[in-house]
Picture 1: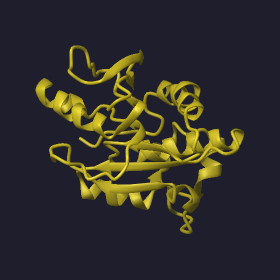
Picture 2: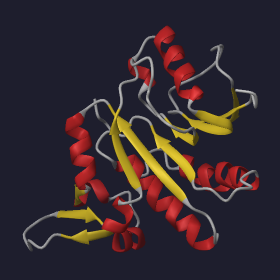
Picture 3: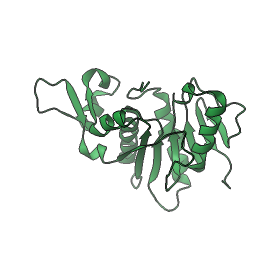
Picture 4: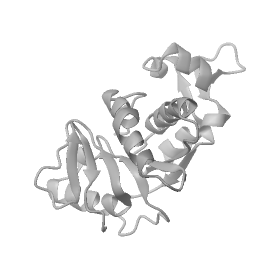
Length: 206
């Protein structure tokens, strides 16, 4: 359906910077970049929200570095996401301060759109990915996966298979965010609940 919004289920972004990121940084002895994966990114609102939130976190935590990987099955929405152009109405959930900082006006005075600034676009890598593929082809594991409001479109056995594959690409101790309408109860996956719609990978051997 490609339904998405900036700061959708906003409490997740509070949990991201108050719980998940500090925990990961406490265990990040190498100082490497934290990889956050938006696994059903649609037209880009979620990964750009992540990039804004993480960049703001980095401003108050020197040494913090991050990358955002954004994937979707639809090449159409991925092209829109790469452009990073959004109408004023879509940007209503973004605070005025963040809009002024991370979006720029069109050169056309009649245009009612804003574009994500190049500095933020460069922090997000967009790539096509199909959940049904046996191998997702990722060369490294993510520290955090956002896969929200996508699983609800699959039956329960398929949800479990998708999550099993996703967690293979999640680092030990990493975090997974799902939508509030989605539950992982009784699934055979190495995730334990931490907060509503937030799970942590528990098997450090995997």
